[in-house]
Image (cartoon, rainbow, N blue to C red; front, side, top):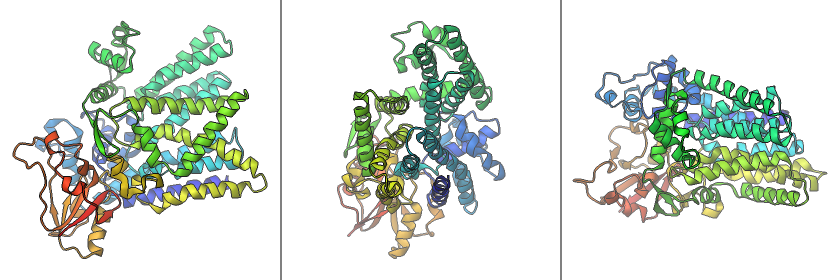
Amino acid sequence: MACVASLLLTLTALLIYQAHALGITVDEPSHLLSAHLYWKGQDNLKPQDMPPVIKIAGGWVSLFFDLPVPRDHPVWQRNHEWPIAAEMIQKIPLQTLPAYVFWSRVPFVLFPAATVLLIWWWARQWVTPWAAMAAAAVYAFEPTALGHGALFKNDLAAAFAYVLFSYCAWRYWREPGRRRVAWLGVSAALGLCTKLSMVILAPLSLVVIAGASAYRWRPLRNAALDALLCLAIATAIIGTAYQWKLRTWTVSEAEQLLAGTGLMTVLPVASWFLAHIPAPGSLVEGVTSLLRDHGSPYRTWFWGELIPGGTRLYFLGAGAVKATLVFQLLLVVSLVLLFMRRMRGRFGEAAIFVLLPAALYAGLASLSVLQLGYRLVLPALALLALLTAFAIDELIQRQARIPAIAAGIVLALHIAPCLMHYPNTMSYFNAWAGGPRHALDYLSDSNVDWGQNLRALADYQNRNGIDILNVSYFGTDRLERYFQPGRVNVIVPPWGSPAGKPERLRPRRGYYAISTTLLTGSLFDPRLRDYYKIFRDSEPDAYAGWSIYIYRVP
């Protein structure tokens, strides 16, 4: 327990420092706004794509600040979080903004810490204590999880909920009963309240109940009662979290949902029944918005080029260059060991409830066109970290005399490259990729740049005595927080229609700092995608937090 407590304290300290050190990321202002309105009972802005758990976790902090929600500004009439939040951030006094952002982020440290604790708790039930501790540490120092763990976002909350659901499903499978099915309902509800993609937990919970009952030859009546109890508990929790703002699905929304999940061809009349089931209004709107985005022609930056509609290999490729080499090795060894155990007839149930949910989530994510970063599969990544316990346990068994040293060496090799890039672990790329300086050869978006490194850019300017820095920034942070007046020349990215805009930027002599997400051109009109080509084709002279590239034009 002392080792686990030390791990949790270390992780908490690292995350709290990140909450202070990293600038405001792209979508945090919209989440701050919706969370504030949630606690006021006024969360009615579109796109309603953020479930209530993170609003509950971080929104209460706003009650202690004078948050200038721009209700009297014309932008309020647009009824959309993003432009309203952007205006709100501009109105917050500079002396207040850092404290507001920091304290709003602090509650989110709970989710990665809780996931680490749960991984340790679950693993110690089927491997040695040292192996369980090591598996927990593998996730605690996984660069993507650490890099996003202190932000006002739902990725780490979803990871905790998914691991908790898998654990509760395993417990119920081993010994079905009222108490365990109640926990299954609680975990499913928590998942549905953290991320819209967790809608899969609703049918999965019923599959687990039906499968466990059939496997153990339980009476149909018992299985039906368990299913009703699970649904009742989940419904009560979800309804409460969504403040009981319910409405029924429209037939078109129901058809869109079923078509998006592939069930329309199997259940052609299901839309009529679904249209008569009350559900939280924002959940309905969020799911339909997600499905609309799924059908949009988004272009993914993958392996140095824009791919319309993304690629099924996105998350596999991202894992190859974003996960540490030790993590990859431990995972491969664990899979081999599990295969060997399966061949010998010793494939445990615990491995099934770790491996299958991880594969399911990563597989479904790969079918989506919303490929905005490796962080989107953090729920699967947490389970894969748990899976490494098998390989670590095998190593410890072979080095029985020195288990702590064996596990320690493995962990040191995993942790060292992560800490070398701290606090900028969001932009971490492994040795296969050549490190973060080669990030754009592979990936972009939140794998590298989420608008978090203006502080590092200002530090670079001051250290090198640069009088004026030409900055083209992707994000919602405020440049005046970090730069003195007159020392920055802002280059506005070519958003919107290409009419009247040059196809390419023609830089003059001087220093230029360009956010990496802008360099790819993926967010611009097709005619403007090469706007920053002169920089994209050049080698940067320096990097600010690895997410902003700095060039000197002679």
